[in-house]
Image (cartoon, rainbow, N blue to C red; front, side, top):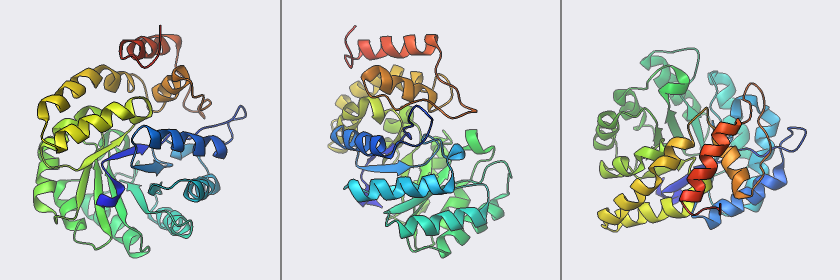
Amino acid sequence: MKTWGRLITAMITPFNDRLEVDYDKAVSLAQYLIEEGTTALVVAGTTGEAPTLSKQEKIELFKALREKINIPIIAGTGTNSTRETIQLSIEAEKCKVDGVMAVVPYYNKPNQDGLYKHFKAVAENISLPLMLYNVPGRTAINMMAETVIKLSKIKNIVALKEASGKLDQAGKIVRETPEEFIVYSGEDSLTLPMLSIGCYGIISVASHIVGTDMSKMIEAYICGDVNKALRVHLKLLDIFKNLFITTNPIPVKAALKIKGFDAGGLRLPLSEADEEVKKILKQNMIDLGIIES
């Protein structure tokens, strides 16, 4: 779905002092991300603390952002229950979002046939474009290339967020899926390597902090200036690493606050960044010229 662009941000969910979803601040954050180069938003995904959001909170987020934001909104609707994923995807479609993203069902550890049937069932119950999300580090299983290739033949399954870290697997998917099916890197540090094997872009966490640089890196590569893209990639390596120094989205929320955008705390079982993490992030951001010392 090339209309979603190449730099999609997996957006955090801002909370107020009572850890209630702050919908106005979510809109403000989305507007800031657009200014930094974001071309579409994934809302209520992993980075958005989806496991601790209620179904109604997710729906209200979809509505609030769809009403106020003029770039594509991709609703995170994946759960470890096929029935619940279908129900939330239907509700997201009613909110007039531009697509849905569904993660490989976690905890259940289905086999590849179960994965195929799960995503096929979701796709058949909506008319929206559906993005698959493969992240074995979260789900405990890897969706194999053969399963993605088979799913890509379903009309409204249009994209994959690939966060397995397996470049050979991603390359096989790019090679053997229809031309209109697109693959996004699911890991910031692999954006440039994934582009080099034919992937389309990135669904990013780091774009909350270095979106402008990431946009320049992608643009340089697409325009054939590989050396410039490499320079930006190498410049950003430390921030890519440090934004995952502990469980996402703990570091990115801390980094945003250091940068001047307070998105509130995190819901348990996640806890806020400790002083050492904050110190590392702050120094990294000083080194990059994002903030002053």
